[in-house]
Amino acid sequence: MRRENARAVALPLFRSSWMFIPLALVAYGAILAGSIVPDVTGAAVSGIATAALGAALALYTGMRASAAPVRLGGRAAAARRSYLTLAFGAVGVLYLAVIAGALNTSAGTLWTCQTWPGCDGSGAGAWLALAHRGLAGVATLLIAALAVQTWRIKHERALRIAVAWALGLMLTQNIVGLVQVILAQAGESLPVSVARLMHLGLSATAWGALVVLATLALRRPFPSVMPAKAPSSATVARSGMTDTVLLEGKPSLLKDYISLTKPGVISLLILTTITSMYITPAGIPELSLVIWTTIGGWLMASGSHSINCYLDKDIDINMGRTSRRPIPSGRIPAWHALALGIALGVIAFAILTIFVNLLAALLALAGFLYYVFIYTIWLKRTSKHNIVIGGGAGAFPPLVGWAAATGSLAPEALILWLIVFFWTPPHFWALALIREKDYARAGVPMLPVVAGDVETRRQIVLYTIAMLALTALPSLLGMLGWSYLMMAAVFGGLFLHYALKLRRDGTTATAWALYKYSLLYLALLFVAMVVDRTAFA
Image (cartoon, rainbow, N blue to C red; front, side, top):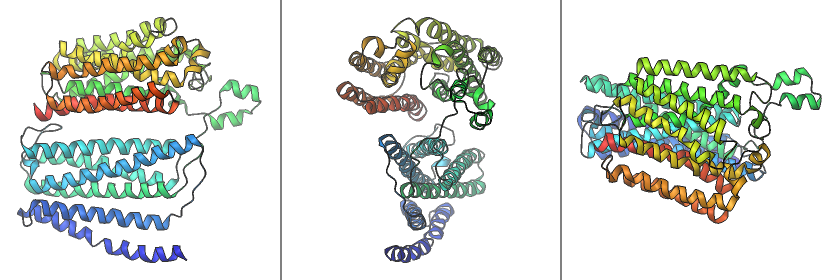
């Protein structure tokens, strides 16, 4: 009975709320036609209309989707909280981006900010334009992460459809937003106005899809068991499974070869490469140069990771998180990984040499050789300092980006290298604390195995403090401005908070929190450099 009454109230609200959508279009049209309504008033009407649409969608979806709570274990409950936080975070950030877009439309900032991703203008309009672009970029990343998580855990079909729509619409509106800038550069007034309406409409629709997803995620049961991994060939042999069962659970061959390159790790390395290209004295690089550098850097890192899988095949089979990889599970011959790694390295060096410059190619190759020979072959199995010294391999991408943009190296580039160098130990040791038993079983002398948890947590704090000091150098030496320093202080303060909390309580949950935030931290830090250079230079 209560459900019927709730539906009776919600459905009229849902139907009546659609009147706000024409109101939003009228507000935008009035703004574009020539300030028929005040700037802030038009943006406020648009914001209210968007919020009304979201509220209506949430009400309607909540009534249509019956609640089906399930009892979840500790890990599943934590995963659900993390998923909901990501979903509602994406909803909030995208709404702010929509509001900022409406204010941009009202203020006409596009005509004074006709470059991308930076802004050649100044004043409040430039700040507003950059805020909108930054919020839209963060929203896109959050939606992409949400999509990956939704498909990875195999959530309900309705949620997968909703997140697919949200991601597709968001990517489309980003393209339309870039088209706006191009049209504004050409002085095409009417096409710009049409593109603006499309841009804002796509954003609002993507936001509506996110609201539906977040409501469904809140109401519907969360998968209590993660998708099962394919059994290894050794497990199949021991358990007597038939060939049919093995084939049904076997991942595709293409996915296996791609997994050898560890694409999830590469994405953060490439981000530091690209952002480094935008903060050099050479200014904003050509898009073609960025694309070729990205391709070459990605292939070079892929090659080194593939060879790492070949060299570590005897270790991987003894570790829980790596035993299901293609080589230890017997799905791919080990020599395939070696051949793939060498081929990718050769192709990457050729691309960087031909389309970028020789220095960038040599630096990328140096990172490749450092990772394979110094870290994987020498230090990983012999020294507790394996991550400290071996972490230098992951610090080469900023040097590659700097060299690609300028054709040379400078002391400023070495500061970037040092920041990543000192970021690596606390980042990786957090994971090593969680996987300590795996490393001990495989005979890998990671710091927690050799020196214990207490010493590892102490070292994490020390390296974090050193890293934070290094992140201040770009501003103190005049390389970047004070806006970067403020952002770095905020991001770094949160990093130190997690490190100190881990030092104090030493729980697995805190180690996971530090490890996950450290990934986000490095991305935010390098993005902050670009924002400072392009917005406030």
